[in-house]
Length: 172
Image (cartoon, rainbow, N blue to C red; front, side, top):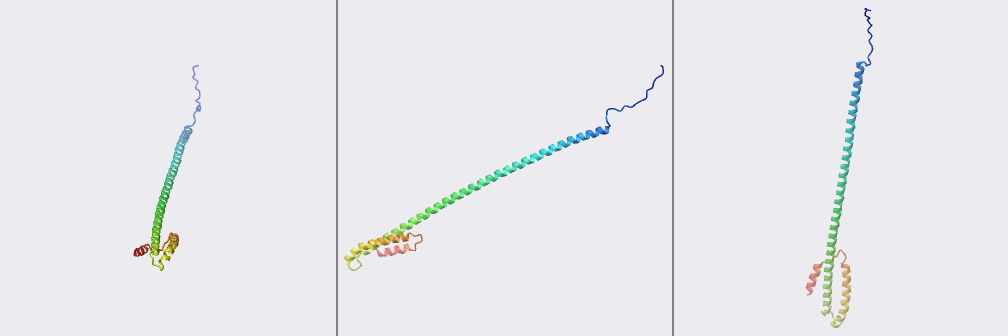
C-alpha cells in the first residue's frame, strides 16, 4: 500500500456562466434602468408643458374676459353719456322752443293790443260805429292772432321779430 494512487484531473464546469454573458446581462439591466429614467423625465417634461399651456390658455381667457368686460363698460358709459347729452340737447331745444313761443305770444299780444288801440283810436270814418265794430273786430283780430300763434309755433318761422318790435315802437 505504499503506492500512491494518482487520480486523473477532471475539470468540472462551474455553475457560473461565461463572463461575457454576465457582462451582457449587466449592460442590459443598465440600459433598461437608463431607459426608464429617460422615459420618466420625458413624461414629466411633457406633463409640465401641458400644464403650462393650460395655464397660458386660462390666463388668455381671463384677460380676454377682462378686456371684453372693459369694452362693455366703456360702451355702457358711452351710451350713458350719449343719453345725458341727448337729454341736455332735448332740454335746450324745449327751452328754446318755449322761449320762442313766449316771444311770439308776446309779439302777438302786443300786435293785438296795438290793433285794439288802433280801433279805439277812431282812425276810421264814423267813430261811433267803429267803436262798436271795433269791439267785434277786436274779437276777430284776437281769433286771427290765435290762429297766427298756431301757425307761428311751427318749427321754422320766417317772421323777423326785430322788425315787428321796430314797427310796434313806431306806433307808440
